[in-house]
Amino acid sequence: MAAAAVLLIVAVMGLVTLFAVRFNPPAEGASLDTAALPTPVDVRSAQQIAAPAFEAGSTITLADGSSLTLTPWDGTSRLTVLVMGLDRRPGESGLAYRTDTMMLISLDPAANTLGILSIPRDLYIEVPGYSRLQRANTPMVLGELQAPGYGPTLAMQTLQYNLGMRIHEVVVVDFEAFITLIDALGGLEIDVPYPIADYDYPSMDYGYDPFIIQAGRQTLDGAAALKFARTRHNDSDFERARRQQLVLFALRDQILNRDMLPSLIVQSPTLLAAISDDVYTSLTLDQIIPLALSLRDVPPENIRTGVIDANYSTDLITDQGEAVLVPLRDRLPGLLIDVFGANYAG
Image (cartoon, rainbow, N blue to C red):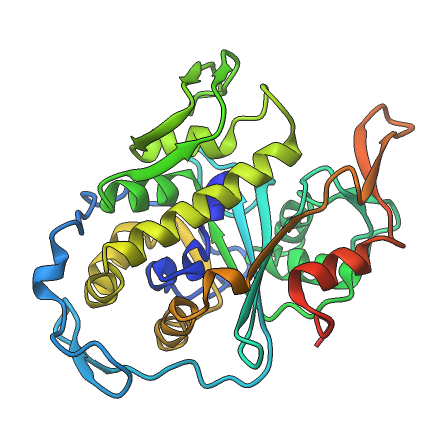
């Protein structure tokens, strides 16, 4: 799900502040039910309540009455976050769903660079503890079958093992969270690069909900933005990954160009309440806000993106008849260096 993309999409540039829901794995056997979302929040006019001085060291009052002193990210080493979007529909609960979208977002504060790598869900890789190779989108389910709340950890361990890159934190979002966030921003302005006509786009009730859109700049509501980021019948998973990255940059530009980050931070408690049942993360609010401030200051020329596409994988039909992508491991280090820098393993 491309929404996931909204990831740190958020962390990618400020929206991160919206994903400050602490991920506390429930005890074994505990319920993972998902409650209905509260009324969506509209932050378009929130600039009116933003703090006058929104600089490092200043103290602001959040919408819930609590105060916070703004400090920049003080980490001196790389921070890498795995962002995943669950293929989970309204009315469904828990984490035992395949990950429709997977991205690694890595901040190198020393070089002031940010790298974003999209990982195809059909990448055929080793999962720690399993003898048979698996698609990259299955560790979440396998982990949850072992113990409720273990899925995100197994997904992190799997990618860390296969890419040789340390992963520190995780963010998991579902369709509802993506739609709620985009609508809270008043829609997403995006330059659609080519026309799309997907008559087989899956609806939220596992039917069909055709998605047709023309090329050109337009404003998409949350539901349309999700379709744009998630459709793949017109092209491929590789192109879908690139569209998801396009969504990230559109979000970044919209938030920064409209100076929305201060108001998003001020309203973060209210926003978090609106998506708390649809977002899981190991990051705390105290970590996210400084991170968002640092991400804001990464210049566009220092943001690098990549996709594990046909240049770094090859098609394979397994003995079970599954179409998968086998990573070309001799080429992956070069891609990781291009996206994250030579010290990506740190």
